[in-house]
Amino acid sequence: MSLPSKILVANRGEIAIRVMRTCRELGIRTVAVYSDLDRDAAHTRYADEAYALGGQTAAESYLNTERILEIVAQSGAEAVHPGYGFFSENADFARALTEAGTIWIGPPPAAIEVMGDKISSRKAAAASDVASVPGTLDPIQSTSEIVAFGEEFGWPVAIKAAYGGGGKGLKVVHGPDEVEAGFESATREAAAYFGRSEAYLERYLTKPRHIEIQVFCDTHGNGVWLGERDCSTQRRHQKLIEESPAFGLDDATRRAMGEAAVKVALGCGYVNAGTVEMLYQDGEFWFLEMNTRLQVEHCVTEMVTGIDLVAEQIRVASGEPLSFTQADIAPRGHAIEMRINAEDATKGFLPSPGTITKMVVPAGPGVRWDGGYGEGDTVSQYYDNLVGKLIVHADDREKATARALRALGEFVLAGIHTTIPAHVALLAHPDFAAGAHSTKWVEDEIDLTALIAATGLDGAAPTTDAPDAPDLVERTVPVEVNGKRFSVKLWLPDAPVAAASGGGARRARPRPTTTAGGSGGSDGTVTAPMQGTILKVLVAAGDAVEVGQSVLVLEAMKMENHINAEKAGTVKEVRVAEGDTVGTGDLLVVIE
Image 1 (cartoon, rainbow, N blue to C red):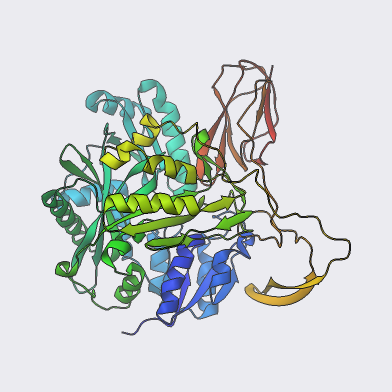
Image 2 (image 1 turned 30 degrees about the vertical axis):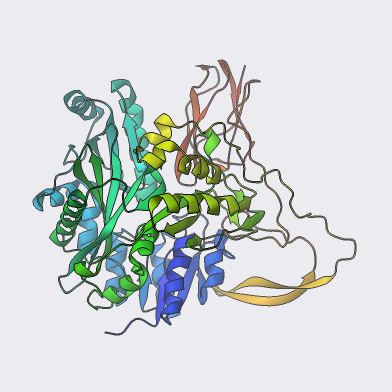
């Protein structure tokens, strides 16, 4: 079976571009899809063709099955690559494509269903004789079940979305008094992000390491594992730094984890690339879950194995056998990936949407940048806050760490807060060098509040003042005709170009953006620290509040953020309601 001649990438940002790059090397044409906010985003500029989805939010655009199927037919795409997130682990979407005769570059829908439900995945692991972290095997129905579980197995307890992943829909409760709020938040976030609110319980290990195994299976019965990745450096259960191989893991344990991962994959009839996630503590490991897609951190595996996982995905989806065997896998050196997110680490990694006013990407030996934005692009509140991934490779872990720090020192990314300063602090920390970090390390043991908060927010930026008699300059402008994007060259005045808010909007001359310093003030005003949508109002006029009490829940970049009072007193006025969209600095609540 030959490879498809045209592939639609049902995603956006860096992963869409990552897939398209391999397609270009294979001589495969690519089709991008885009929301109203992403009309001129980086992935639409890179693709051979781009088609409009309509809408702004993910639900209105990238999760619009009917529209994507229309574009598949309209564009003549023979296959669809889902990237990660959105529809990548949606069995109904995969089934709709295959029923329409389109190649799905992912696992069979049945395998997605088994592993997509975290409860059934635990049962599947048990059937393959692979132990899971102690937890429930059925969805919880009430808060009393959570309390009973905590009393039996000990606190804290993790409430986890059954159809979730990536830290979404996961809440940790430390005692009975936190159960009701945690259960409500976990199920609400799960429903909003995954369309399913079911949740289950799991013992929350005290100091585990998060180690995952890259697996690959084909339609000919072959299954291999391609080494492991240590993803223990996390915040809010979302990864910051990933590396391969895992530090200090002995060969016998590494092999046992790899063989267990392949057993789980083959046991559920898996095909294509997947990742089996495990928790490791005190020499023991447990099955956590399986991600039925290409992982964000697949790059570190590519760097140490030399295998293009996306190319292999396309070949396997086309019916070809794996191009390698287990004996061929011989990892070399050490790779580290740093997720560069639009977040302010000094404020608990608060999301920081805005426009990138300056961007200089590091280079040199052993340095790779997988990015989804360029200078002048806007990181929108409506989508994930990952700007891109910086990956380095060297002969060993010590050299890779030094190379990572060198590359971070070269990185210039202004206009938004980013995690770059946090990466520098974490990689330079003696705990990281000693391999003494765990999934709790960043939040429980590291103080990042002293970092310089911004990466150029207040620095010099190109002027936006237009001259009195502007010269004409050639500009390439995106034009949409009948839902298909075209690029048209025009001669226009050399003046600032107004940009639509959000997604991939660009300016001819970038404007600096500002971010509020906090969620409230000592004068009693509570303001929005970022753009977002009000999910819940927790107080009303006349209520008494204490310092640090949550007064609102604000959703931004797919995360729930509790906005707290910084002054004790009585609520005088609530200026917003649930569902309202707010901007940075908007007044939300007044306390007197």
